[in-house]
Length: 142
Image (cartoon, rainbow, N blue to C red; front, side, top):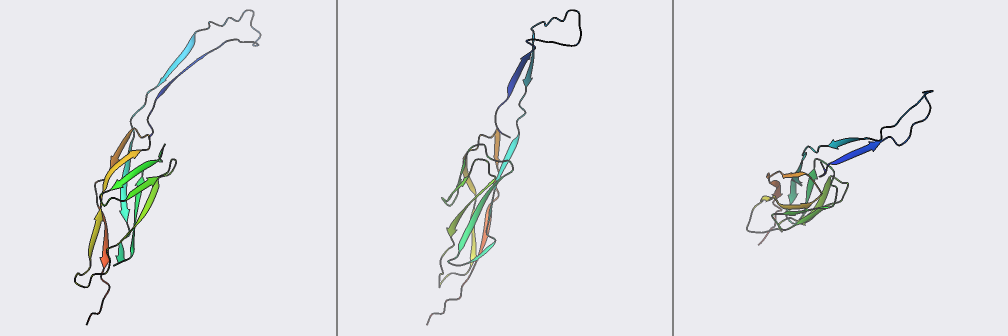
């Protein structure tokens, strides 16, 4: 899941034993190339399912493979989530809409706007919105 590929070269410098009359080492190296096949890592967003007005919404970004370096995820609402190197999740808490005497409950949603870092070969962002139901708190006014 992390970017890179490499090669390996080894050779025999000396050989002893085996009870041979004369054992010669040809000195040629054995070379192997490791071809990197691009792996896709998916980044998705989830949120608290339901919260009362004025409560808190927790957004969690989840990777299908651990990050090689820190990943910074920017959400459509401006919130930023950092996923540490070696981790697969990170979270941020934001305030839900405050109590409004004129407005009933509704939904709040956010999407992943941008993601940077991680050292991934191919980072695919799930476009699905993370939706939170905001329940109405009854505010009596006279």
